Image (tube, rainbow, N blue to C red; front, top):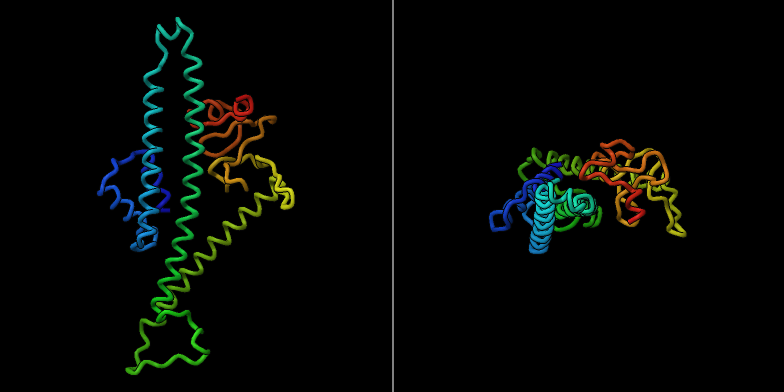
Amino acid sequence: EHVASALQEGVRNPVPWSGESSWLWMVVLRRAGLGSPGPLGQVLVLATALSLTLLAITWNALLACRNACQPGASLHSDGLEQPNVIQQNVVLRNMTQRIQTAEQALLRLLATARHAANQGAKVAEGGGAPAGAGGGGAAEPDPAGRTDGIGGGEGGGAASDDNEADSEAERTSEEEEQRAMIKYDRNTKKFLRFRPDFQCGSRVPLLPDEEPVECNPDSDTPCCSALGWCGKTKLHCKCPTCIDYRQERRG
């Protein structure tokens, strides 16, 4: 949750790329529970931060361009306003889809990295091998008879593993439920691009081809709102980040 909120804040208010912003992304990673990343993790953080910063800059530039091209006398007289606004809305929708897809993929990657970091920490605390790998003998008692702290550490690790397992199980369950809704065929790899429960976009998992869930353009709910629901009102079809899949089909 910390990572998701930090990423969304970074997209809305991008910071200039510098050593300070790199340090900020390291802090975000630590808050996600990954600790101090190694060289590969640092490369991942830098690449992710740079990509999202570029997306945010492009997003702000498009918004600025759109504001600069508000209706005016010359545009009305020349008949150029409507094509410009339509083109800008199409670009904004495409950017929204790309940002949502990148955010979901990054969250999955961070969850996997966090799980790997937890496993590595457990192995390091256990002397380099998982419990039970040494031949099945009983654990050697502490010479001073100390038992406090050991059980607590194991309990904390078990709780962390349980939470990670629950999250993974919930994610798997959501993906399986969605595959049933979109009638996914494991043999032909064919599926519907929309769900019957009117949910779309970032509200639900990605489709098997790693694209956001769409709305049925032939139905009474052809538009996906910014909140991830299919409908046909202005809030579904006319906002800057809404997607009208009837126009997507024509385009």
